[in-house]
Amino acid sequence: MKQNPFQHNTVMLIDDASIDNFVNEKIIKAYAFAKNVLIHTSAKSGLEFLKNIAVIDYPASLIPDFIFLDINMPIMDGFQFLDMLQGLPLMPKPLKVIILSASLNPADIEKSHEYQQVVGFFHKPLTETNLNSL
Image 1 (cartoon, one colour):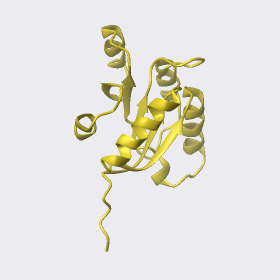
Image 2 (cartoon, helix red, strand yellow; image 1 turned 90 degrees about the vertical axis):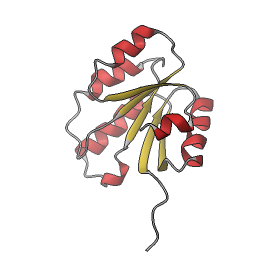
Image 3 (tube, helix red, strand yellow; image 1 turned 90 degrees about the horizontal axis):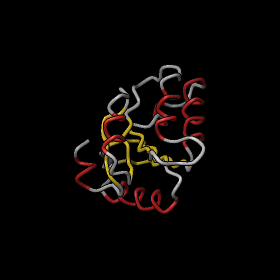
Image 4 (tube, one colour; image 1 turned 30 degrees about the vertical axis):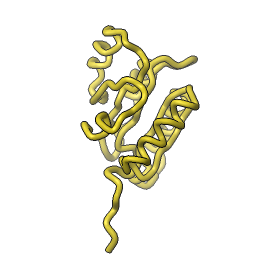
């Protein structure tokens, strides 16, 4: 039986910057952090995907082990996403969110601590050190 070389099955990137998604996906794959990388270019589309998983009997493998979330996005920012995420039905496993932002504002880091799903705050782009800390 072949051993799975990946640390996790699925992660989700939510960022409106396509280049950031491209770079972060490459880093995730290069370090075999996750087999599947789901990419959403808006917080709204990421939230809709998670709503569908919550109400439809999707395979557990589609539920992200981690959600890497940008804060500064148009229409719905990362904190609005987190507010809405708290209202979703329970998932078969807890959702873990990592803020992945270019923000250096200490208030953003402090605010991220208000959300129980947030388990980390990293500055873009992802690094091997970031991934190894999870």
